[in-house]
Image 1 (spheres, helix red, strand yellow):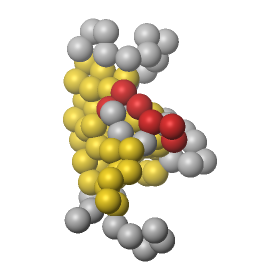
Image 2 (cartoon, rainbow, N blue to C red):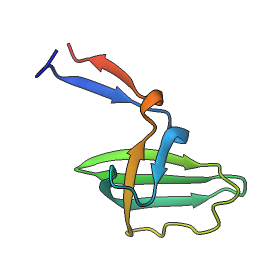
Image 3 (cartoon, rainbow, N blue to C red):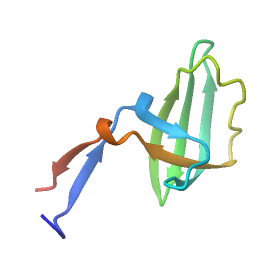
Image 4 (cartoon, helix red, strand yellow):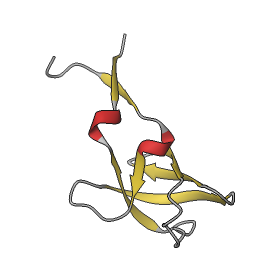
Length: 83
C-alpha cells in the first residue's frame, strides 16, 4: 500500500552499473576482479549494494571510489513488507 515500508531484494547479478536515466548515483567502495566475473560493493544513499558483473563483453572495470549509476532489472526485484 502507498506509504508502507518495504525492503527490496535483488540478486547481485541483476544489479546493473553504468549510465541510465533511471540510475541511482553511487560510489564504488570495493571491486574484486575474479577472472570470469567482477564483484562490486557500491554505496547508494548510505546503503551498500552488492553487484556481480558476469558479462564477458564488459572490458572496463569501475575503479574503487569512482561514481557509477546503479539500477535494477525490474522483473528481478522482490518486495517484502517490513514488520
